[in-house]
Amino acid sequence: MAETYAAEGAALAQRLRLDLIRSNRSIRAEDVGAGLRLPDVWLDKLPGWRLENSARLAKDMAHARRAARAVVISLDIPGPLEFHRLYSELVQARNGRVRYGPEYFTRLFATASGSSSVVVAQARDASGQFLGASVLAMDAKVGYYLHSAVLPAARPMGISDLLLERLIIAAQERGMEHFNFMVSPPGQAGLVRYKKKWGNRESVVLARDTAGTLLGQAAVAAIGWMARWRSRSS
Image (cartoon, rainbow, N blue to C red):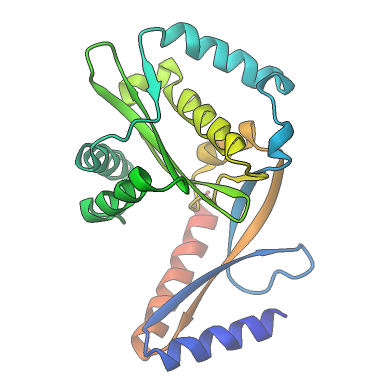
């Protein structure tokens, strides 16, 4: 299976004349193959999910509701530029790469305004200051936790938890059966722990980079070296 998957990826990259193609798939322990293993966290049996089923979640949410009494959590859509600005600042503060530009969020939020398949939850304080937002996309009875950005000063109030709870409830109300927290980048153990606090199922996604050109081969080699360096450093 792994060999067939690799061969199909290589053929596609060459046919489309792509330097590099990255593919993701959920894997079983006995069918790993070569590639970057990324932790994947799910919330299964979503219709029956209740906050009270987890003592830790119930405690954290009780704190958030006390600390953020003056904060309004709504499904109103924030300005895409203000969300992009906050998202970019957070990524750059972690020395990451800003993968999405303002045009992407403009199109995404425009979709949310006219479709029930994308939902945005936002947080604002009593003065109207934007504190953060989270984005949900839905397809085939699965809700996907696409993006989240929260002002650092607002995190101690539990704004991230309040936004995520609102999205999970929105997914329930729209008939979703599962909630996927999406894979986490390598080296972000804290993010994985946060997702596990909410999820009830874990799996692994195999991210495979396949080269279609010599430049792509060099990129694959560099990515592999960086992954090995991170594993030795952690």
